[in-house]
Image 1 (tube, rainbow, N blue to C red):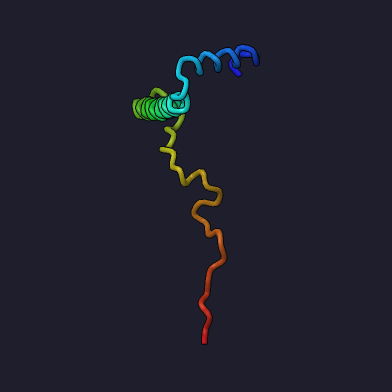
Image 2 (image 1 turned 90 degrees about the vertical axis):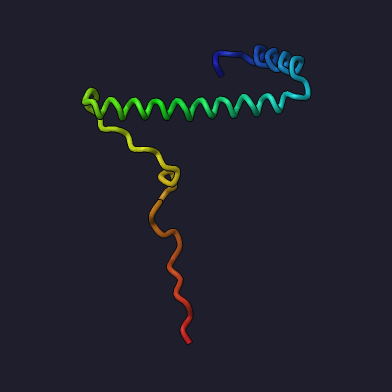
Length: 89
């Protein structure tokens, strides 16, 4: 992990506990949320630049379509269960 050995990781953890104490979970959560937001913004900027380059004709690759969450689901658009037919009397 980033070229750090176990001794360095323990030392960083000890320093974090000394600095933040009981607030450490809150600080960790805030840092995680900040990193996630940064990654989302970076992906948006990257996608916008790819689209702009494609529209100007500078990039021979086709523009990537906007990513949708339901594209990640295996079998999206297909029925995952058998069709239900109500009983007849």
